[in-house]
Picture 1 (cartoon, rainbow over the protein chains, first blue to last red):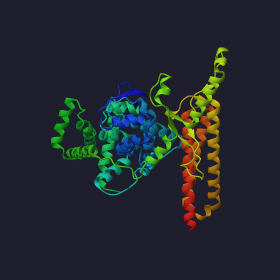
Picture 2: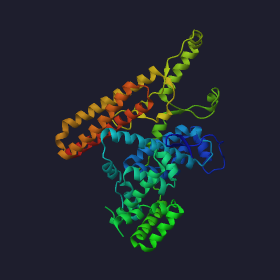
Picture 3: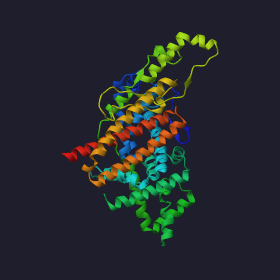
Picture 4: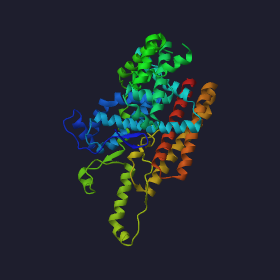
Length: 194
Length: 254
């Protein structure tokens, strides 16, 4: 994974386009401006991107952020050369967009004295009740820093060193936030759905 | 075992689980686990939690987001490869309608008098990216059909005059629509209960602060595409909130 600035990963764009992937034709068509092909790419990837957004920034921001990711992908599609699968490239782009949004939200909260706990509670919009959704809801209630480290490490599989670079923290902070998140989730899930 | 001792070990359980402990610490912790039921319980819970996290399934958003995306990317035009190749490109270039108009204007200037201008040592007046906003002709006051801000990354160099006029036009239009909605809300706020009014006003105050911040920042850096897009977003947010509030009023009025 490449890094173009403090903590922000960027999709690689220096490898030749690779044919033979299932979505290669749609990517090629979309890069030439075919919106129907891009819609197919959207439909194939939206669940993953929206789920990542929901977990990273909360339900209320997830729709807008998902749209931002796909609009950005459309704008940058010409730079995609097929080094990885389109889904992987899109996913990295999504992480970039979400980290940038995280920075923006952090600035807004600092300026406006936003209450992190309240915002996090609002972000976890209740839906149905089963184990997976209770778990998702509990993740949504975590404080922002702990939630993002938990999602990146335990859900998305990033290493602490990568997370530290992305979030602009130390590896030790990432580990501490992860443990904090896990212990909070443990308590929350033991209490049961709220 | 004291609480401090319990905490000392439980604080290391995540690292133990992730294989991040040094061999000596790992051996010490394993020794402790043999005799400490509470720590073993915590470890098992954490192990299950990590396994569940890895198994979380992705799910589709409740609403189809494609129409909104299609609307936003429709504001971009595709320039054929052959045309771009002249500039050494060859890939799709995303360009908004106002940018396209601005580029066309520049081309007219260049073809008509640019050579003469360049020979005199002049420099065409250009500056950095400006808000990538697009006028939508649909009548009515909805957030969706107001100017749409696209990604700052999608902007490109454009002449100062054309974009500044467009941005100014769109912001004026937002202000007018917000004014109408706000007036409607003021006239009918008595139909809402005081708690609802308070929540709406608190949210409006937050958005207004963000708008004021963005306007102040833009005054210092008018060509900043991020700030332009941010301001447009905040204005859209305000329109959406006011729309919701007016719908609430209508519902209360029966």
